[in-house]
Length: 285
Ligand code: UDP
Image 1 (cartoon, helix red, strand yellow):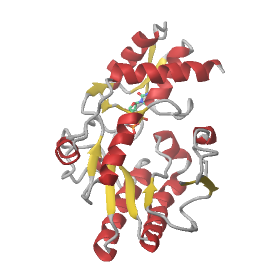
Image 2 (tube, protein in one colour):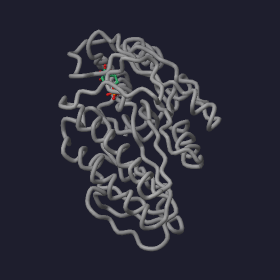
Image 3 (cartoon, helix red, strand yellow):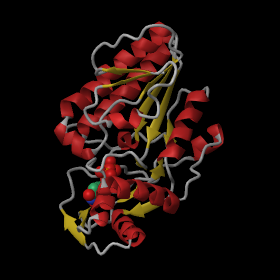
Image 4 (cartoon, protein in one colour):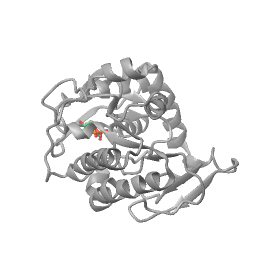
């Protein structure tokens, strides 16, 4: 297995479990530039991109590049090696959705010039690139639209809602709810996502699959839940809602259920407990 990462947002320690395994190789490089991989390659999983809204402000150009040029490079690698290609796309292709819940057939409602557009439009272009390589070069391509995912090994300062609320609750600081907190998300535990990625990779279907939890919660309810879970004395502080923050998000997973037999297995309560145990350890360290 060859892992390629330029480490701008990654934690190198996340690879500790793989180092030393026979055949494991790490290349520190940006897939937006040409990356050469020697020998046989059977599968290319293009998972690279900063994905936290905080990163959209810090790395907008790198994000556009990795979604467009990076996707082109990885499709080129798959074509050259005769490998199957999987694109990690995103629920952000639906933008601030006007259809709820979101089926794969929905085309989305994306602001092409807003502060999230570097990510949203790059991923939409990545899907277009992927379908073009499928149609023009018959590359075996797969597309997964990943919804909000959480779990151990996220960065404490990642900026997304799960690490933020957990860090704040553990430190007894106020939980920062953006806006009135009525916007909704559905949270998928990382093991369920990985099972979904592998199910899509193993399938024979090139059309996109939503992979995510269909259990929806408001951000305010979620903050209250984290406070209860930690037994924290933290209060809730409302901060301004970021630009173009989607009002509602929940995947329609009928397609993944029927074609792949996939659905999330982890109850939110259990996933949050495991993740909280991880953040407790990291916060103390
Ligand atoms: N959010 C929040 N407080 C935070 C971080 C995020 O209220 O400290 C909200 C954010 O406005 C959004 C939701 O939580 O409505 C999920 O945000 P996240 O950054 O995790 O990912 P997104 O779903 O926006 O890509």
